[in-house]
Image (cartoon, rainbow, N blue to C red; front, side, top):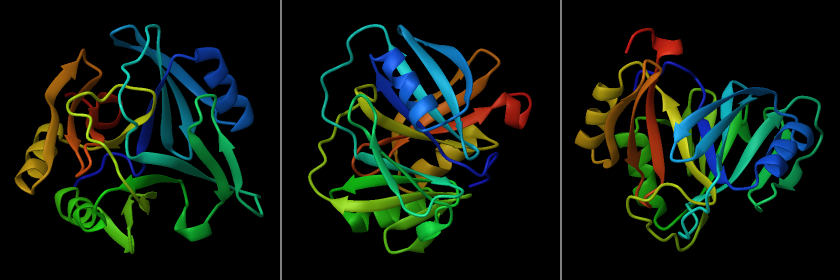
Length: 225
């Protein structure tokens, strides 16, 4: 996989705009970037996170009542910490600030609850071509995807919007080539490629538990689409 950015991004959905913005900016201390409209009554509030982006998608309408995704938590490296700080956002999503370098975390780690660790190992190393960084740990640039626990994760079908953490984003140079390559290596489609204005070409693939991964070719990183 040819990365255009060495950091994974994370997206969550919430109806609590003001509370969420206060939490991520003041409690966690993430710098605010900008807001963009993504359609369907959703505004995306983007925050910087060690090179990654935390996408707080605010929905003006009630979100679908769907089971939680398999994204169980987020760890953010922070200089100067001596011990992890366990937090939860206004919707109860788990986030921890951790000493930079602890457990190999230099940027962020996305924690997963999974049905089948072996299936995830095949997906992340073969279909997604991430580097294995230890048992149940997969590196993309300076970000980690970590199988943190095994348990029941319900498939949510094509529905990728819902309360809480819902997707991660990998920024690449060629959306079409990467999307087709992931499918050829056994990944499942979560949404065919499309273009949003002159900003981004993107598609979705799904891991073995139906978690959505956005395959994003962003013009600010790659030039023309």
